[in-house]
Image 1 (cartoon, helix red, strand yellow):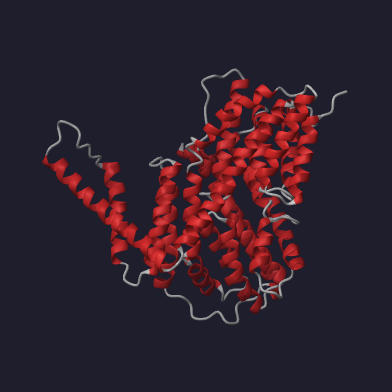
Image 2 (tube, rainbow, N blue to C red; image 1 turned 30 degrees about the vertical axis):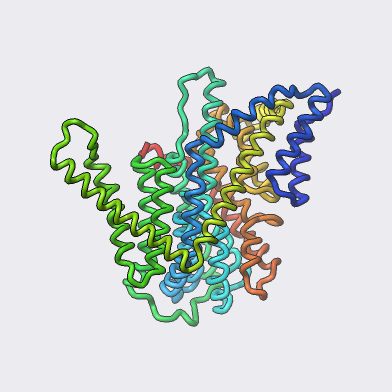
Length: 516
């Protein structure tokens, strides 16, 4: 009887990751070792490795994944420019006078930062440095305060635009196409990033509502755990609220609105977000930001005019009005370019340009290295018959399609204790998603359920990333034990959120059906 190399390969990968070496090296190394063992035992044909070139080329030319570094850049710019701090301070003064109000403000700020940055680490660290000491100083239970900060920071994974949702869109689209091929359909449908964003928007807001309801109930029945602020300070004026809230909201509308409205592709919208974030940072750093504001308005006007009155000067029937409009648009573009250059110069002068570029490159390289080496791992795993074994296992699960989905969700939840969301997305999901879709599950609904589950992986001990981020930013009087205990109720709330989406699929399918 031959050894089940596919199962041994998966177990070896988990063990190797737990050792602590970089995941991408572990995946590529494990794949190479088991390809060699499989070749020596006659269970793997080395000719399959010839497909690696095509897989690498397909990854590097994938238009969907181009949006990832641009969204990462947008988030890093907003983090380094300290826009999040101003937003937290303003919202804290707005809601602090009510019982549990500071916790509610942290959740709302987390939702706004999620929709404008999408980077969990940046959000958790920012709120850990600003909001957590304030909550503890004003009598909040340290466990509750820690749980609020950790959980609010993870909203960047489920509220679009999100790196997780972009990766999920690519994985689920491939799985959907594969399922249709196996059904004998060769004129296949696909899933776009815009559809996944639309599907995740209402569930993300539902989670925000669940967190707020829990906080208000907790503050009502256990008032000492979330008291009103003793030092709430002066209530912010309408002008101060507008100054803190409107810029991130405008950026969110520009990015999400262009994607959901079909005006721009995800990569084009990500470019808008990156430039918009840079202009916001420049305007905040500049005392007299008239040029930057004028340049931003000029670029917005260019986008509106280009969509409503397209100018094609190469046509033979152009007249003076077309040339005049073309000249006007060129002037607007030059104004926008001047504003962008001034924002870059201001960022360099403040010393944040180099950290922005370095952080963007680091995060992007990590994500793409993981996706690339996961492709190598997946190829060898399939060559050893792992995909067939997974399909047989899921189709024989008791309970049919629902039983198979419950098993996969539990598996993802457990793997989230040890693995990163990127690793689960690119290793596990390509194996199980096509089978679940073949069983009749809606791919968009499935993507949202999995996204919430993967969001939970940031909270689950012992390796939840939000826990580590908060530990690095929390005051010394907050112990690791308090942080771990504080997230447990919120993990339960995540399960409640998944249950809502499970039993009310329309929450995730209604918006994409209306828009698309």
